[in-house]
Image (tube, rainbow, N blue to C red; front, side):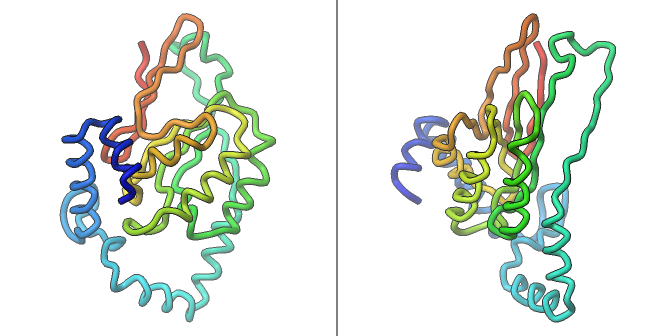
Length: 207
């Protein structure tokens, strides 16, 4: 790992916690069975990836899947709650998830085409950002940087099980972005805390 990234992680998390987190990630990358919601982690069975990919290409399903992935759509979910504070009346959250940026350039280009025209108050992007659960993440970060340039508002992020905490320090340079940290969103008469948590969940807690 780059020493600069390691230093930033230690400053942010503290040396013991940074070391612990990186150790957990290393163990998870090598784990095929056990832990998590799913007992069997096929994404960590590296030797079978090329076999599955080639089989899908020979059958034609691979290319069909890529075309399906490129048909990115916007889905509107309206939340109606009597207890919802007035400050959130009409509040719009743009949620983008599971991009696997480095796996399908066509899907990313499609996303970059229509996000500039969307109306929203804040954007939350949740992992996974990269395709693999291990190895380099430069291509994923480059793709996220391009996408970030098309998002006009503040962006918050939480990591997925394919991602590494090392994404964080380098992603902070992508405009007004925050990854895997606790931040406060203040509206008149209401405060929200948006948190990125280990084991890959983002949640809102009001105060």
